[in-house]
Amino acid sequence: MLIAPHITLVYPFDSAAAMSALHDHVRRVAQRSRAFVASCIGVSMVEDEYVFLNIVAGADELARMHRALYRDELQAFAPARYVPHITLARTTDRTLLERAFESASAKNFDFTVVVSSISVYWIDPDLPRRAVFEVALADAR
Image (cartoon, rainbow, N blue to C red; front, side, top):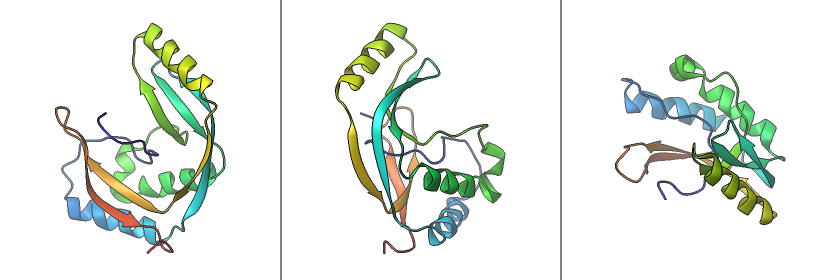
């Protein structure tokens, strides 16, 4: 496993920006955000490459934080769309993808988590991903 299960708010990107500027940006977004509950129910196959655990409750809050994070320093990297989710599987092999989807569908995922912080990960293709920093949301300190 390269990274523990998580909710993606910002997709990987390459930038020459200073880590301190990114930390300040994330901190500003976190200061304007309150901890909230996110509920996950069911799975979806997306873009013939992913199996997502669907986030239903809390999706609006995640989308708001996603948009706020892509302002300012990260605006150039903003994707066309965002679907709040937890990635369960990723492969371009259709047979493996369908098998992962069927397996995940049989699990009847239905759980709730409290979203209380934003973590930023450094991605090296040859190493496990590691958190560079984590910022608590406004009322989670």
